[in-house]
Amino acid sequence: MPRSSRRARPLRPMAGAVAALLATGLGLATLASAGATSPAADPKVVYLTFDDGPSPQYTAQILAVLARYRVPATFFEIGQNVTANPGLTDQAVHQGESVQNHSWDHPDLRPLSLADFNAQILNTDQAIRARTGRTPTCLRPPYGFVDKTVRARAAALGKTIKLWTVDPADWSRPGIHTIEQRVLTAVRPGSVILLHDGGGDRSQTVAALPTVLTTLQHRGYTFRLLCH
Ligand SMILES: [Zn+2]
Image (cartoon, rainbow, N blue to C red; front, side):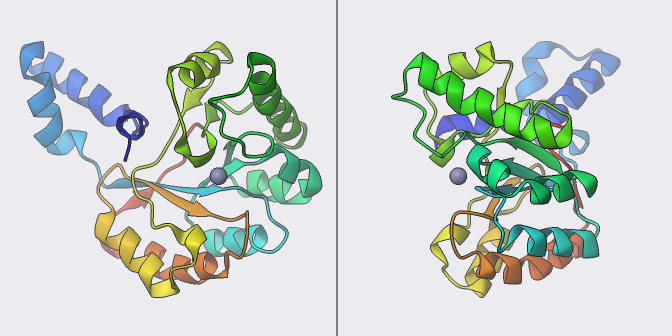
């Protein structure tokens, strides 16, 4: 896992740690160790994310499972898939999900010219805004490929880069049970879980979802949206 993915973790726990330290008058020198161990900085929250949709076969099925278990999720959508399946982006937003930017057609963003990079991001923004009325605030670069240039260009467009911390490789169809176990053994407070609703056959992901959601709920986790 590249270092950059760790930086994509939510900042709220650290902000909480800062507030707690200021309140108790502790010095900033102890911030790093206190932030790593303080229960207040370690809430049982997870972030469920779905990439590469919307897909006519699987996105509606995933939305139905999320609705059944009352779990919110963040969808990093592909611009050309939004224009091909606009009703599914409507449905996600209507259901209260977060819809964010995953580029127009899923290239490695690193070697692109500035003009091509901007087209990938801004055309996707426009497609999503046309359905949701909101401009995405977050970008998930395809494959998680990020370098200094991608970071600088994303920042220039006002985008926060969000990667993930738990990757069961559901896209490779390793089996329903394997997807469940990979997520459930890796998940920690603050985890960002990567799953896929588009880009291929996602029937195993759909089938794994109820066990993942109910097990995490039984463990006391709550689910929150990213970038919302
Ligand atoms: Zn992707």
